[in-house]
Image (cartoon, rainbow, N blue to C red; front, side, top):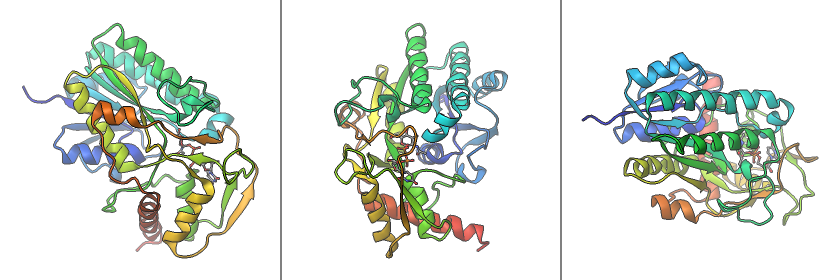
Length: 332
Ligand code: UD1
């Protein structure tokens, strides 16, 4: 029997498009569902792109049936922590309610495997770092809560039907495909490395450090930055794992090492070859001081091996991509 198809929601977005590229190169049959609210058609390098919403049950049910979908990789979501604080209903709607509708369709269609994009934000401010998968789940912003509710729905559904899943809790995803094929194109991005690269390429005037009084070594926020192509390869490993009968599980996706905002900005300056305009501002709403992954379970469970565990490589690929984005905007 031919291998069943894979539905990738949010496959035109930053992380989804890197996963679609790897799935396509590995010969999988892919259908992408994306409403293009933050994604781009051109980023979908393989498979068929259907433009629509993950919460649209008639559409999703039709896709699952027409394309004989056996596995769903669910990326479509809003991901900006401060925005989730100012507009929580957007996050509970787009993230939680849409995931509920998607899961309902999956149950009815008898989908076998589900890979869910969750987040380190489910841990809130962990008492101990690195945060393992057993660390208490106490999100401090609606974004984290919206994803945790989705994790719980998935767990409860899998308990009563023939669906196995992998929840991947992403730490801070950054960088771009090393061959320069795709990268992060999100307009008005808020995330640190993207913003710093926009400053380096002249698209923004300055980058702010949000908070210099955190209880961290240099007073700025600390995160575990993972290269997007390493994160993408974890999804392919998770799919193989489920197809080979692996039990449902939840895995952190990070390298296990933390870098401060200042260290990240130093790295971007080093790759760029000159200083950035940096200003210091107060803490941003919803930000934990530090998040670092305990990163052994994913290696043991999936046999995943990262290839790009190097902050300068992450910032260099992000900067190279940003130069392309800006050149395209200027029309050359
Ligand atoms: C990111 C992800 C979120 C994920 C989380 C997991 C994005 C948009 N969000 O959130 O989905 O759940 O990682 O850890 O990718 N900072 C500045 N100046 C800036 C921007 C950020 O100082 O202009 C600081 C922040 O205060 C924080 C760090 O840089 O300490 C990282 O922030 P950001 O890149 O926005 O990601 P997170 O909020 O950690």
